[in-house]
Length: 54
Length: 396
Image (cartoon, rainbow over all chains, first blue to last red; front, side):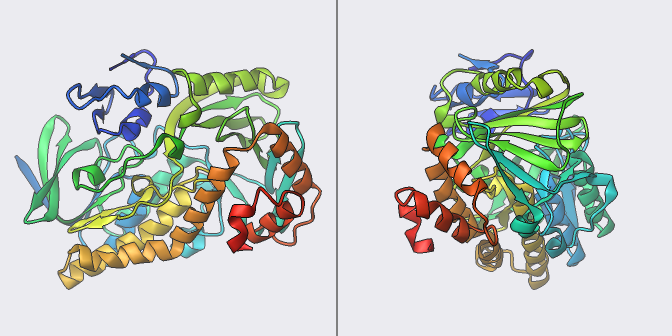
């Protein structure tokens, strides 16, 4: 998973939604833990601005 | 590594965290409130509509600095455009203010600081420290340095994206039907009625609603929440809002001066919010009202209990989960029943078609409810739609 920095508002919607705790929000950075990610794509859907893709 | 010692570490300086820090400090504990951002209250991730009846209970003085607009009531619009007006007379204390959330959050932090709490900004908690089955602190990143914070109690007030609870082994995960994804514009130069907070229901916002909360005569927060389980494509929630605005000439002509996004839980309460040396409060504890998606009042109410219990635990030198049950029992006594009831109602509301919304709102708009409460609402709806309220019979 990756987040488009030009769209991302750093709102944390993906972080709290991820069922595997595989996304972290640092102050100006969304970080994905690929090892934990199970590709459920909930973060893609919850992102209000459509900034997350595979 | 630099070390800091305190009795109570509160992670997150939103309303729930600041109220917790305030009451813990007031109760005599040494408190450190940490906030990952450089500014408390900013960016605002909130519709800023706030009821006011509860402020007194929590002891928060009403202050002009954070009140943008006092409203007379709310208007609930059906998909067909009929308005059900809930005014102060029928809603009792449920109506309130449109606030300046950034000012409100700073104001609460100030109350905490005046009570003696220390505050650290730009302090991002990376993990908690556990010893002998007790949470006893956290490691944080502050201005490019790691800091070890030793605490007898850690309070997770770290919002929707809470990590503290998960690190402590408390299951805070949410199902897609218990999440609303939201986006909001602050729009100026629009036509709005500053006397009312407006809500638009139905397929314009599946499983949620669109809100227009007026900050003044020509500026409002125009936002939307859509249930995550109803989202099909990336970025869809923004498309829902943009499409709706496009059809509102009075709003479309305005200009956007702010854009915020976020997600809220619309779930049942967590099964457990305490552990040895740990408490969760506010959005982190999934305390948001599942009907309105509002979390400030519940977070503050629980924060008062959380802070009081933290101070008592420090005084009693007992930070065990058993002692902290006082908090668990305390916040549940205030919030749990309503949250569960509203969650049930939400589960029903998200299934309704536009036609049913039209009929219900038409009915309620023309019904004189003596007092607005769930009982009277259900009774009114049952008269015409007995099937709809079947599952709520025990409340009638």
